[in-house]
Image (cartoon, rainbow, N blue to C red; front, top):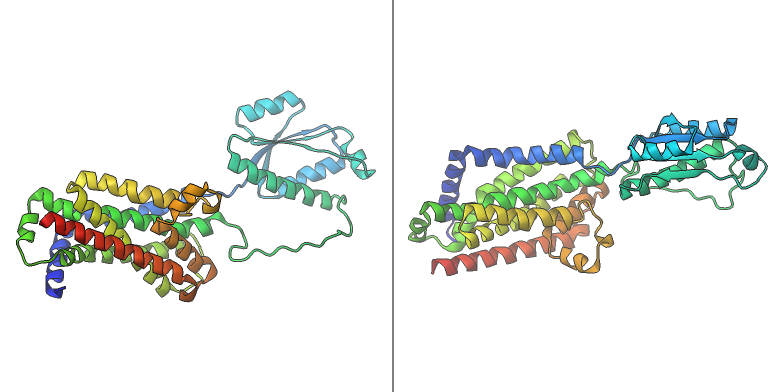
Length: 369
């Protein structure tokens, strides 16, 4: 590989990028915009669930339980009803997502050791929120009952729970770092998918082919400026994630940048391969979005747990490089994972990049011939 020819191609690509303000803006503004949009829009935390109460007991105990629920940040009592039919109407109209019905004589049964029941109705149209709400509700009711003097004085089993890595269970702490992987996937594949196709459409590829430059030199030269842009975007994203979203970065920044460079190499190679195959900027951009963005968003474990997916989809996720990058980036951010702990992820990302790059070189050579 001749370094001078690589630098010449890279210099030509830099000039092309500078002449195209839209691509330049796309390269630097899109990651920031996506990070803001996704970072603030995507959350699985459930706070201030609107709650309506039907209290037929009207006792001090029932009021203490309701006050206990209101004291938690998970529920917000928006009203009291005096007719069970109003519960249905309130949930149907979306004015409340949780309804609590306390029957008559609830306190008498509770204080005399009888069977005291509370009916809880949850809007299940959003199953995820309903499941989380039930968990919060059981915990809040148990806590409220203990404060009211109904809990066992000496529990049979003393369970003490400790949550590591994300003790406050903030969804932002595990979602936002994964966003870097999704954003880098889009930037890498989308920008480089236009490079080779642009040369074909403008008729300048024939001039490049007539030079002594080899396919590998051409591809490396085309990828180099976008690799630098990708690293700059990664640094900007890390700063935003830490400074703006408050996600703790417990691991090594250098290790994070090194793994990001491995991932970028694979992503850029995919974009170049798409560009070589399609020879059309429109088709290349569409193919890049479909083949990179959607798998990274849905199958990388960024938002949806891979172990909960059907077995065939779990098998497919092993082919998605974003899966390994998301795993590594979360490990560095939250667990301070070291390079030794991430050897598998780094090895697979490097192997994926080399395979795709080799295929791109072979494919381009065939087209030249």
